[in-house]
Length: 144
Image (cartoon, rainbow, N blue to C red):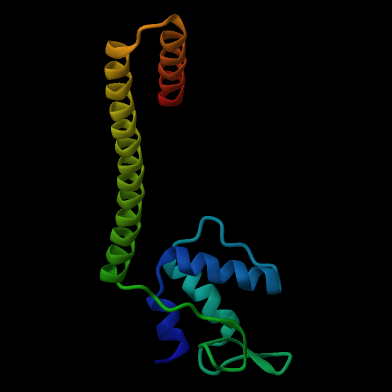
């Protein structure tokens, strides 16, 4: 694959990022240009027939070549969809873990409340009632 073909195959955001890298290297503006104009501007710098050399290296090329700036590989639509689906799955899993933790806390609180109710039935002294009240207060403050 030729550099020109690779550049023309990139998406607009990738072209903008590539041009930003070139801009930081040569100070060029990308504002208001469409995809074709961006690609042409990059190709003009790279060289349309043969690669221009800057400081002994080609400006643009592929990973592993001796170049100043590596051209990113274009993601297919399928790869983009898979990436989005993976991110969504991570979000869902995080929500599921949060819900599981919340349910575990609620179950624990329910068991403790049942124990307190049973203890209220058998409590006889004020001291026992006060201790149960403290347990109940602690349970309600923990659940908030």
